[in-house]
Length: 175
Image (tube, rainbow, N blue to C red):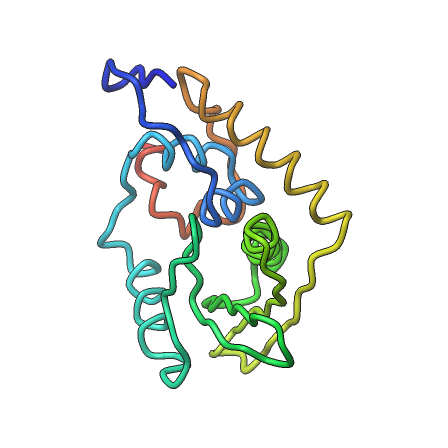
């Protein structure tokens, strides 16, 4: 893939959980992330997310890499791998479900069976996710669409959505 901003070829892009999460929220952000355009790392929402990730579920194994994915929590229950994804809130639950389902799909592609749980520590809420044929089909379509978005020479035009007010890329899109 050719990066117009850098004037060279990008390394082979690998769709991961983060790109899946953003795909269901903002396709422009998918392009920006894939082209290594870093968001405002001093954004308070990023700091809150890091803090929650580091300080929630301390007794569980966290930040485990399995193949090309990085899961927040890993456990074994009833003969299955149980992977958990920690989120600040359930506000973007659909994108969170798809991210976790993608992790389950990657496990399946590597011969492992798993189940997932979304964890919202501030809300004291959990939601179990199991991979279905419908989710697999949707995720495979999302992977293809993400690759198409990332291969464009320019990002999609900004589209004002509710997330924009808390987005670490807001200055990039709306300045």
